[in-house]
Image (cartoon, one colour):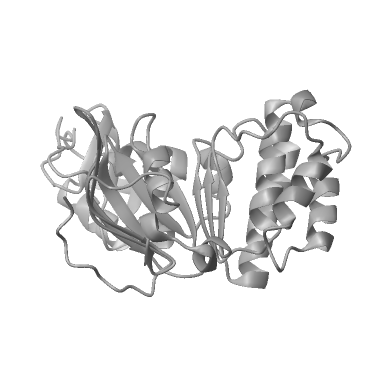
Length: 309
């Protein structure tokens, strides 16, 4: 039974002390974070980290075991027509009536929304190269993803939740989709949460990161703050030998030998901190920012109870 005191939050997605169990399996454990309005959020994690479960909880398809999820300021399990009209959802494996055509499915869904944007629908069918006359039974997995995306955005939602929306799309269509998400943010101020393993793609658009690791929260933070904190420093010994292991807690990994070492770090202060570090060990230093693919395994290590190696 959930006995937590309800919290009124103005954020479009608010999660507090969230735990979700399926029998003996704990999919999410004591997760807490909140997402400010108007952000594009990368929801990251390895397979089985709990990303899909979290999104299903956020749109009310699942109920918490304990804790709280508030979506558009209402408990997610109590969303009514007011919130549902402002919520868009793209599921990882969309299911549609196979006997319908694409246009019939769009017409059916549009009937539930007072402000369905037919002009946007027409443009997206063209940009995503989806034939409205084809039956859903004839669509590839990628084309079904395209249909799911169009259905989720043409009522111009306030909050858009997307679970692996690009996994079956080709690179050209993925680029168009990324442009679409940026357009939604600019025009509507929509908050977007996108779960994806295609980190090189999502890195182009996100400005916030939520990372789950084995059902626990590893990090929730603005992406630019993470970019400023994570780096790779290359150290070349000017005299003497570099230690086999650096004792500083901000050093997350080390490669190389006694003369040349590459260390990945999470530290405030950026280049200035790196230069101080290099002076301590009598070395010359070059710094390089990490991309999201490189940063991801380090983010997972931030989970409580994990140690750096």
